[in-house]
Length: 171
Image (cartoon, rainbow, N blue to C red; front, side, top):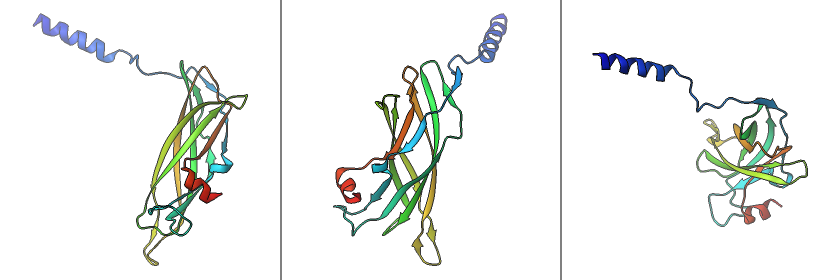
């Protein structure tokens, strides 16, 4: 019985102790300025290969962004949160699902890229039951950017990732 009471006492002390693995931010820092990459602001996708102007499924545009949360510095990293608005314009779609490849480049005060992070934004394009067609849709997404605390990002550049063929098609 004595061992059982010691076990309960020990267990209660451990369970009520602070969680050392939770990291608390050291301070709030200035958020970097965010931009959309001019050459990667638009995106097109085709369900058919090879992609060409006649078989596009949809086009997407980076429309707007907002930094609504505080930028926080921890011991070993800084966290930035950016809300992004993407407009999807259906062209010849067979299903509503879209998967949009996005990158966020962290840039220092000398315009050197210090980090590149990649995201996959998923969503569904709205379908109009009356006309039986997909309609222009807004997709909102939040991306979390984690940057080394040793190198402060002064700018964040956001764009669509795409292969050479898709990039040539847009230009």
